[in-house]
Image (cartoon, rainbow, N blue to C red; front, side):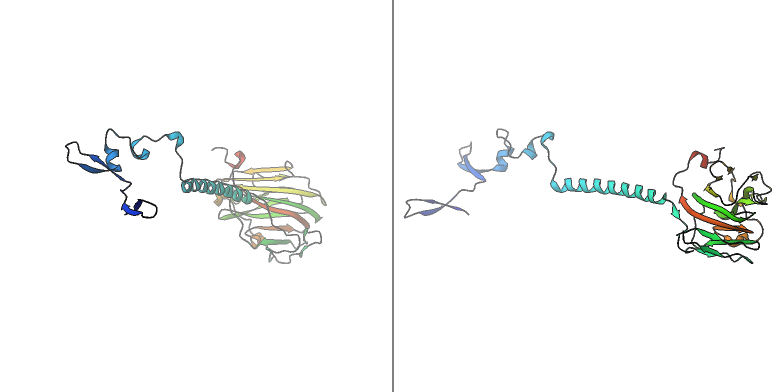
Length: 292
């Protein structure tokens, strides 16, 4: 029990000090004093409450949150914002074109095992040169390409010869087909094969005047049910609504040696550059079948 001091400075005597939490008052019945605690005062209807939190409605305008709660709210909000930014960054990264030629060598590719095929080299300027074969030459991708929702872009030139300088074999789900540019005598463009009809037989076959020693840009876009081909944007365009990939196939012969993704020529020396692959993260209106 705490003590207080009384008396003269020289002769102070310690006497017990009453508890700060109690006070004596006279009993109404005359029975003497009894201690009254703070709890008794708070329960008394004539006394003012001691604790605001227990006896008053909180003033919402003055309510403050604990610092730990404020930090938790800030941390949660920050993490959610960071996650959204991360997802958007990943989506943007997936949409960036992937260069399929490194400009130095054939890393990621192998020369297709075609009978009497020509040599394939990377020139000092980074261009891939595919030599004349008897009849075919080509290369095949050694990595795993996507089979749906992607776009390929390629620049190509027929430097020598008079037949196709692009035979681009691509995967479509579990099947394959080949985009032909400059075949059947030098000018035919099309797709081999649709319903087992090759590029010279189906409805997407067109003859164009394709010149040697000139660069052409090919763009191929593969989405569910639709395959789109364009050469120099408007020189040749084909939109194949194949529906199911089983309708697509490779023409009989050595072209299957360029699977799963490959390039080939026929009795022709070709130059290839700027070969890129871009994943499609959002479908455009033309990527969908027209009957949807």
